[in-house]
Image (cartoon, rainbow, N blue to C red; front, side, top):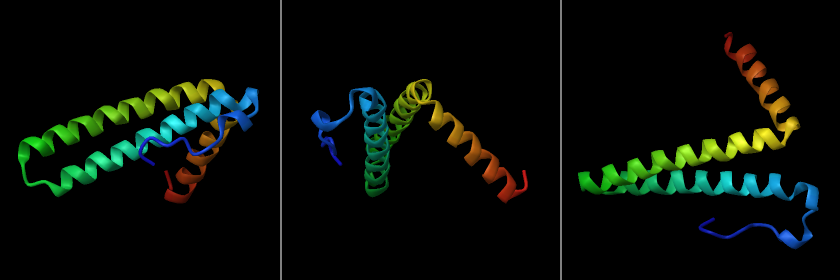
Length: 94
């Protein structure tokens, strides 16, 4: 992804824009987490690895912040997450 918005904002319905922006921000954070963790795994320099993993951890916080905002904006998303949790609990016997 690397800093490219994958949709045309001008074609977005105004009422959907904030939710889609938050989803894009979540995707960007996941992309950053994956990138930094991959780079950390490639280096043998312990200091560089430590910094990459620390930054990846910060990106996980950003992911959580954007997800929290999205869940405040999208009631259907909240419902679907709850249904997914119940399905996983049923599948895994918890």
